[in-house]
Length: 124
Image 1 (cartoon, rainbow, N blue to C red):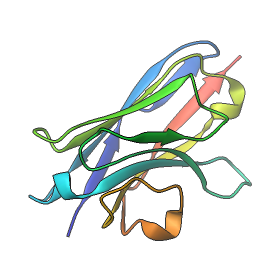
Image 2 (spheres, one colour; image 1 turned 180 degrees about the vertical axis):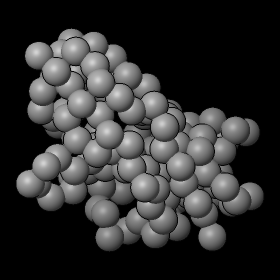
Image 3 (cartoon, one colour; image 1 turned 90 degrees about the horizontal axis):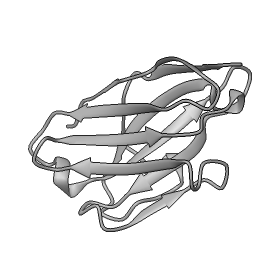
Image 4 (cartoon, rainbow, N blue to C red; image 1 turned 135 degrees about the vertical axis):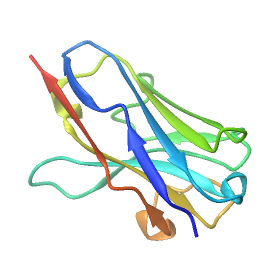
């Protein structure tokens, strides 16, 4: 069992930056690929970024590539999402998720554990 708690969301102006954190409970954190997803009002949840168990492989949605960076610290049981050059379209609730897979995946169905989400609002 893995429990996930996101933090770091908030209100930021367009062009600004935020860093989201996701703290995981459980001794098996380092065995899980981790991902970030987001859901904007009136839209379906969408993939943002994923990272493999060792942190050596990452993948991003085209909409955030070059602006967002996912990373993890297995010693701290924490995964991060550094978000730069934020724009209005990045406004959403951001969710952290853990997969039983070792390799990162873009597919939400392959994630078994989800956090409650943290709101990110980008203003003009």
